[in-house]
Amino acid sequence: MLNLVLFGPPGAGKGTQSQKLIEKYQLVHLSTGDILRSEIANGTELGLEAKKLMDQGILVPDEVVIGMISNKLDSNKEANGFIFDGFPRTVAQAEALDALMISKNTAISGMVALDVDSEELQNRLLLRGKDSGRPDDANPDIIRRRIEEYNNKTAPVANFYKAQGKYYSIDGIGSIDEIFTEISKIVDGL
Ligand code: ADP
Image (cartoon, rainbow, N blue to C red; front, top):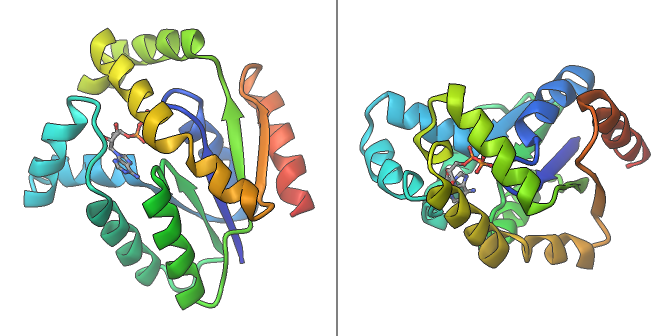
């Protein structure tokens, strides 16, 4: 199985690259942000609780997202592999993901990190907010909060995969196709 973690701050381009990766490698895309937004759209209890945090740019609790991922792994038993986008976002989530992989007799193949500086991120997110309709993209204070959450809680996840020799990083500034070529080189070498 090919199980990839796509890593990077909000606005790094994970969603865009995921779409291209699932096509090329026939993977199932698991984006916790997308799953949470679909819970919100369906008006579920979980969605209502998550929305309060997401609208402030704060991470939702680990148990919630770990449970969501576990369900999705169970409902995609025939998959060739998975691409994890926006997950794991804390070291506790990374540990839980390793345990889930072991329970399915598989493992994370590698993490690919997209490197983008924070000024570029702010600009991209504000631009996306103009047409994405995402409340968390519309307000500079909330964007700053998300980048802060990333620096405090998510950035350490890179070390978790570095320690396992599974960390690869690439420059996230360039054309979509250029970046995709770089990611593909890494994936083909895994
Ligand atoms: P982005 O990468 O642009 O910040 P996402 O769509 O991945 O956007 O996430 C949007 C929001 O959803 C996050 O700010 C956070 O509140 C919540 N969220 C998504 N994934 C996770 C996760 N793995 N753990 C905790 N919260 C999450």
